[in-house]
Image 1 (cartoon, rainbow, N blue to C red):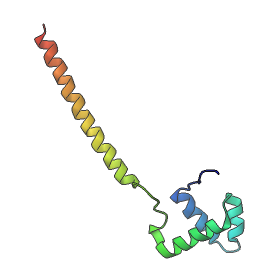
Image 2 (cartoon, helix red, strand yellow):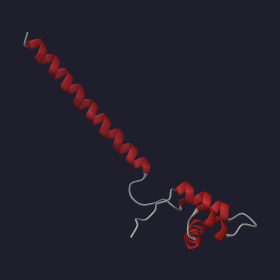
Image 3 (cartoon, rainbow, N blue to C red):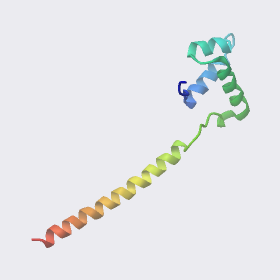
Image 4 (cartoon, one colour):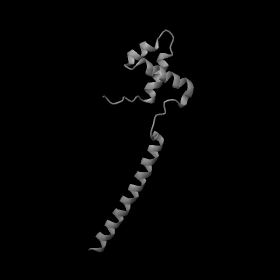
Length: 95
């Protein structure tokens, strides 16, 4: 069995927007995008019920991940600076 395909929030929003145009059916838009019509219909329902909060996905949001990465970078940078100072100190005392 194949793995599940994951679609970005932007893709889902654009697909819903395309399917909401007059004269264009859900089936046609789904076929053009290469997805199942029932999936597009579900995205439309989610968009109508949740509005801008629809399609937030699962897992850690990007902003939280970015903040965690910045904290980690700061910690590693401080550790590096301490090691540089220690290496300079020991190099000076070994002369």
